[in-house]
Length: 104
Image (cartoon, rainbow, N blue to C red; front, side, top):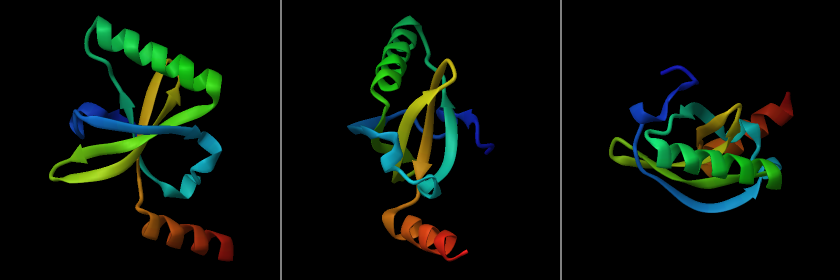
């Protein structure tokens, strides 16, 4: 899948758990990104309100998405006129990536 594939191809259920400042997530934890496409007016209004609130507060949403039979950590952040969902590496893998990047 390309980095801007539709989240519909990945999963339909995202569980929001918390909102945190974007700078608390190192970019090396981001694995793949998907543009979120709302279906219907209610979903479109919800995405718009969420995007505006996150932009104004400089926060992103953390949670989990089900992909196949696995739950993956993910974040949702404002992106252009919509939202972008990025799956995240687990703490162990992300920590290794950060350690390797800092040694360079």
